[in-house]
Length: 194
Image (cartoon, rainbow, N blue to C red):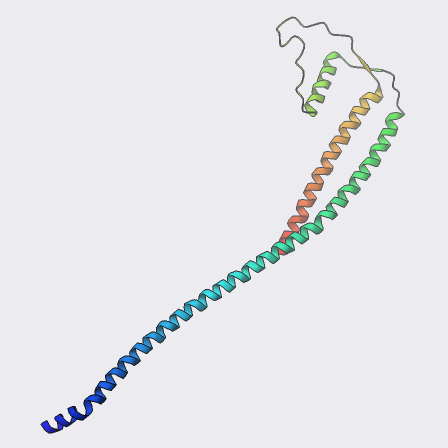
């Protein structure tokens, strides 16, 4: 038996050594393959994420472009509607002005000085100016006697009313223009985001 062991050791040790080296190389190659596969998987995931991010960015750009085009198509329609409304309002104002021109210019209406002062204060407020102080209130002195009440014609009073109505109508028209433009833009945005 010892001879057999000696023969096995003498003749098989190169094979055993080769088998051990081969086994070690296989383990190393397998570990390298696993490492390369994991690295490849990470790179593929990174590329996939980058592609997904790029696709999302392209989609977002397309939605922004679509929204800008919709806004651009809404704006001319809103502008045209506002222009048509302004033209209609101008025609109505021209008709009102013709009626005002037909009224008498004789000073037949008389207002008290207090009413004229209120009227001036209302006008100052509407035009963004400070109202003038009441007579005698700033200095503490006795009030100055009131001047005779001025007379106004129906035409003057109604011209003030017509000017106020025109300014109010213009403000309302502009408000509706902005609101309609906002509503159209909001509808366009909702259409794009759906």
